[in-house]
Length: 450
Image (cartoon, rainbow, N blue to C red; front, top):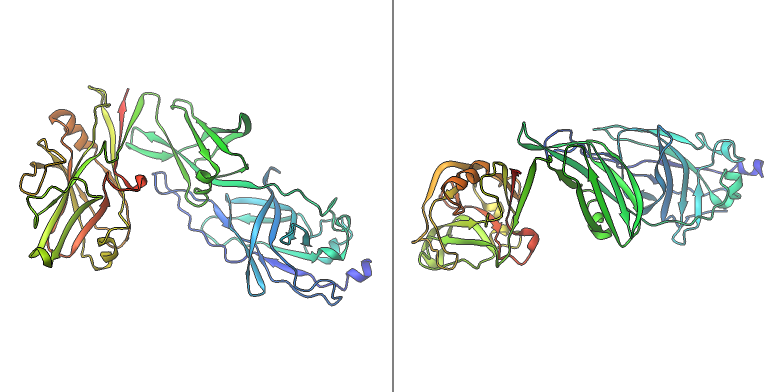
């Protein structure tokens, strides 16, 4: 058997097309992303004819870190065919050193069709580097792994060093998680380490420490998961997620924000009932537009209305739940791009669209406000919003801390969104509280002292 096997051709496995963009920064929205690795191979026919084009559907791989801890436990990765080559889905790994103790290619029936022999096995001499194969993941470079495999029908699992080629493959969910703490010195969220635990269906699944970076967690399939994150001196975070919720954070990390025990947060979300916003239109100056799904700041031409015109948006958030006398440490207004707007399709025609957010100083009614009866605004502490035409579809996250502090003193009558220049064609296209998609509606987060 050994002599016969010496005649077999092996398949050279190599990691293909593994590219990831990594950032390292303490401030939120600039994350220390993990590396991503993809495995790929091209099947080769054997002279013996035992295996021709194998049905390669999945890769089953186990990976251990430099401490011998299993970070990928018989993870099943789908293989996608590109001609005679195959490529797996990407897997996130932190920069560091790793070893592969198991490496198996399976068909659509979960039968092993190729395997890398283990060191000391009967077939170890058939490959240049039997398992375990070592590799490194580095930041900001392409990380490549080379593994050789032999057709599985060349022998038994024991001859490859495996007890068996029959496995119970466990499905899993994997997601990325980053934890931020609010830093009083910088008045901003910064990446931080923390302790975490996850339970499901009343059973503790996993717990441990999270690095001050993007962390990748892998869990067995359950109907729901409860994530708890704790850090000394900070309020405990607890939230329940479905598998679908976590799946959405495979490449877009779930961001958890921790506040110090001396702080509290008020998040004001809006809908058609609680929200208060309207469009003011110079070419239709006496018509109320308080029930539209958009918040526009536009300079455009409307031929049916007589030519060039301007639109502004006014919005107000109910801050009744903000305790009186509390110091506002941070206030953030979030406006979401309205992709289903007529003007969104014309974004490529926009000129520079710098905008202003100003504080409204008079009371107004959403059902009656118009261009002609619009309330006054003040330029004091107005926020200048840079042009976004080079980043089509950009959401706005606007620091309105000083404006909210002014509202505590002078009264809360909301904000006005307008363009710096009214030379058409230019605009800002955001969703309002009346938008059908709740994820696009405006929100205001206020961090204050308890």
